[in-house]
Length: 205
Image (cartoon, rainbow, N blue to C red):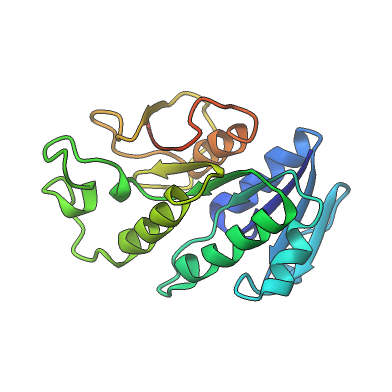
């Protein structure tokens, strides 16, 4: 399978690239700085900007699925890029997309009609990042694509354990953190796992 990875030089994206290559897949990665990713067999690196449609087309060309590990970076790049990505996916007939979100856009257990970042479950003063991820969630929800949003809580680097809990649309009860490596491994596996198509997935230890 050929997997297009966006945000490939980020903490989660870098792990996803490694898992995909180890899994025998071909990976195409769109990066702003080619020097931040090591060339290796099975990896095609394209230097460009996710806000440039031509660059997005170059990385998604011939892809069977897309994984976006783009983060908010204090900008609106995340939500501004998603319409471009979705348009190119439709043009190329790509159906599967997995993105990395945040636990803030999961449903609140204490206030079920609200998202976590809007409820008393949230301890964050700033909601800017969650609002960016919410826009992506709304954009994906409006499509007929096979999408999944992996929503980690506090995300330290940590080691891969393979021992974690997941729950559709909610953060597992009592979940406080999940490592970058475990989050990336779960996200990578969703390319072929159909369990959470059309859903947000909370992940935590």
